[in-house]
Length: 622
Image 1 (tube, rainbow, N blue to C red):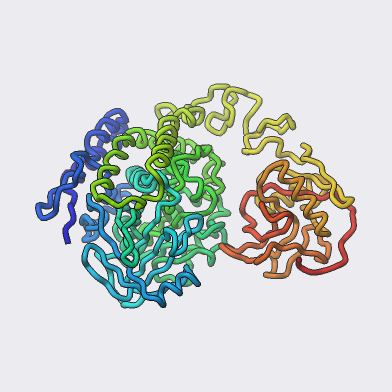
Image 2: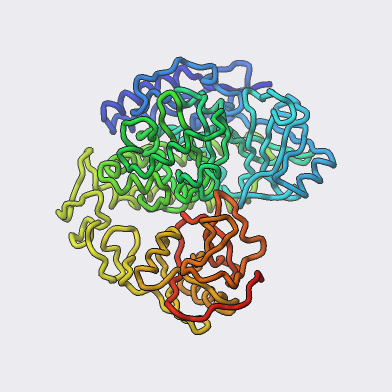
């Protein structure tokens, strides 16, 4: 098997030089060195393998600086590990050939239950493995076997202890959510450059049952091996955040545990119990909190790249507890929808993000990380990197139809990506300007500096009162979010309601309605629910909280106003209690007034109900 390999000596020397410039706070020198040195690893030194076709360099998948280089784990410099060696898959400069062979039983199983494991024969660059676990993967990217399915391979599922080049699993992404073909490769590299552990990637040409090969992206699994390479102690617990999961005590068992031996999850429970103690406990120096440097870098790079489908919305991220330093880190996953939606710098719904943004010093440090993330994005020279990756793909001479989009469609999406990259600093300029040369700025002289959402108007700041003028006077992130401000009034089946387009968690929405002298909406009939749905989507086509919940006891639903549950109107298959536990009801986005259950911590618009009105007498689900 032949792979081109990186010359790691040049890469290590480059990283040391860059780190020296960064730690001495010399940003101009750092940017110059980044441009000149980071691609140096692209040259092949393995005479046994053919040289990569293009004479250009590419993004470097070599390992990031060890955990000891971060602020929180200083003094924990680990010795070089075997896993630090270049990987024959992820450091290859050539497309790798992968074949999956399914028998009739396996094909029938994947068609019937695509997420259920079955057996396959897998060949990687001529190296054949029988009885490999295989299943389909993805949410929006899910495709069946007749289309372009994404796969997850598990080499040990039916052969205990077996690995492929040290890998227990391997994700093969179908690229249907990334028509540019480069979002994940470039995005994960930028996370690594920011000091955040992130998976490596490699392009492969994948053939299923001897069909013509197609271009896929192999993504390194986040597992025990990954943790050993990126942290001072790789024996800790690794958790994948399912949709809706965050560091809440009631979410602890909703996380998938992908590595570690503490099956009782005592570490995650302790972390969740630390959250109510505030920012000093979680982001400070005491044990059990976060690796401040890495977490702030993660939050900043997520915003700069526009990773709206990640921790921003409690989705596609990992949590790792390093037991040696007793610190937690956040890591990205599934960033194939990045580089096109411009996120606001303080829009994240993540609990760790909200806690930091509400604290002055933590916010200042976070804005500093935003500056660095923008610098890294601009230093990468994205157009050149795309040319390098294109040359690598073209050298494989894949047949027509091997790529998920036409060349015209791909060119259009890449133009959008480059427009996003070029405009990102300007989009964030109003926030970035609040820190200059490491010092907080206060342009309107109201004393709030970086805590201010409008530093040109001294009447707008975190302690201002909402005056119902369509502006976010108190910098809460929402305009007119005071109970004295009117929401949109509607009437349904003789009852008065208000539609409040103020995304809040369910509990906060319930309090808001009470403060208005109303309750989070009880719905008495199908006619009433359909009417509210029609009116609500005129305000905004989104999901709207109503007052039904089973937060106290599973399947024992209660209305927020205490009325008996005499009518329900669930969407088919609901309530499902999926993800991290879904205990609060909302009117579904496209279900014509029917309801579904959702995680109570998610921010949604909501409906308040005025006192009075009848209660429907017939109980049941339609």
